[in-house]
Amino acid sequence: MTKQDISMQRSLSLVMTRSAAGLALACAVLVASPVSADESEVAKIEAKYDGYKTNLAPLVLDRGDNLAYTQAGPTIHPEQTAFARQMGRGVYMPVKDKVYVAVGYGITSTTMVVGDDGVIIIDSGENDTFAKEVMADFRTITDKPIKAVIYTHRHPDHPFGTKGLGVTEEDVESGKVRIFAHDTFEEFLINDASVVGPILSIRTALASTLLPIGPEGRVHQALGPTFDVGPVSLLQPTDTFSDELETAVAGVKMVLFHAYGDAEDEIGIYFPELKHLHGSETIQGESFPNMYTLRGTKFRDPVQWYQGVDNLLKYAELSDSYSGSHMRPWVGNDFVVERITNYRDAIQYVHDQSVRLMNKGYTREELADAIELPPHLKNDPWLGEYYGTVAHSVRNVYGGYLGWYQADPTELATPGFAEKARLYVESMGGRDTILERARAAIDNGDFGWAMEILTHPIRIDHDDMEARALKAEAMRKWAYQQPNIYWRGLALGGALELEDKLDYTQVWNFAAPDIIKALPASAVIESMRVNLDPQKAADADLSVGFKFTDVGEEDALHIRRGVAVYSDTLPAETDATFVSTKAVLDKILLGETTLPQALADGAVTVEGDPAAVEAFFGYFDPPSDDPIKLVVR
Image: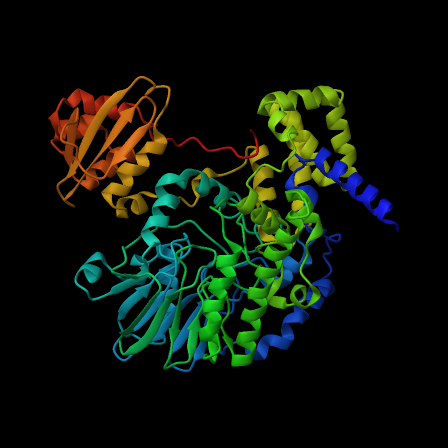
């Protein structure tokens, strides 16, 4: 092929790619072979794990069950089934009589380290029910009291089951139990819980807690067999650090160190006398990492991530065993170092090759088509694309460096959200023609294209249930072909939304009341700014101070023509000052009481004009139980 031919081919590729700039994620997916219900196909995939089983830690308590769905079937990609079968529930022992890891009880693998007069628990999990079940099995091993709990980071499956372990607020306040975390734990928790909590909640739930477990729903959660709604608790850290902390609890020496991973506040723990390393979620389970999570997140910097893995490697080279927050523990120094090295190199490879092609002009969608792992990484059983994928990770790299704009002014000149849908429907010959074409696409197995074109008639008429049902069919059939659990789950959840069949009571709430109540008053006040209704406050000029008598905090918000400006001190002059406790403020914001009721009960007093405080709260969105729709927009 001549250079001219190559240039023409590349130009044609660019035209085709850009003409489909709005194409659904489904059109740039892992190309899945037709799903097979044949048990022999699943067995072939399972066999790739056999050569590594000698490097798994001994299983010392086998519950004999698996909370994932493990039956092969025509609606499940065989790789999903094979991977689900690695998630049996039980307790592993990577260090004899000292380190135990509970795997398969939920999405989190909780670790217990046994000391002289107590135990250390790493990650209490996603809810109190989960933690109680784990602790019950740990109690068959030792009855030593909990002396410390370590939060590896703030994501919802890690610190929210501490009371379920049996730890109380009094235990923490008295110093009986210490809680360790990175010193940015609270900062990033505030963002997740009180700033973007509502949207993170529904986007997470759509691929997990809103789906039934079974052949037409959840198979597993990739990091563990299941992720479920339950009562959550949060006790604030007592011991935090920035880069590294050497300490001892119950006679166990440990080094806690920052190791950026899927979270900015990620930490690892090295136990020098045990030659054991806990890598938390810097190594994100037994699959390719979520360099970007489809539930939504701030930019996950791949360079910081593989540098975080470099921090792990320093300690891995000294270790004979390894555990993580979402995996079965490993034994054998060479094996541990090889796995972590491959994981690190996969992240750098995806980053470097993305940047290389970006510098040649490749767009976000072209990157997804162009980059795949080299064979030695692609064939590593612990780098299967069951949680993260290369295709959606490279889009994150592009966005992190260059943002959303792909340098084609068409993106700037494109008609508005609903108007573009109307024009698409008109240009394609009308709504009925689109449905005919979508049906033909489904019959031909072009599910992504069917989903794409059906989006437009639905966008201009949310009540078009025939179009919604057809898109749900396409979305569901596409989901059944996916080896990646997020892609499958989001599509199945989207199909249920289209059919009005979602049970929104099963949303895991990032902004659950117990979480909000655990946040400092200053964080709650400052985050109120993102709930200000700009129309109501368009002409407002109102300053309200806050005095919290129980926690000794004073701050203020100044509403200034549609913007709420936070101050961490109480100004000399305000229109009014709200005087109460943090607990009462939480109740008002969570809709558990009203300001008039709190004033009438004497739970709130006002310095200045009470009407100013009432007007102030009226400018903010009230709590809402209305479900957020993601697909029917």
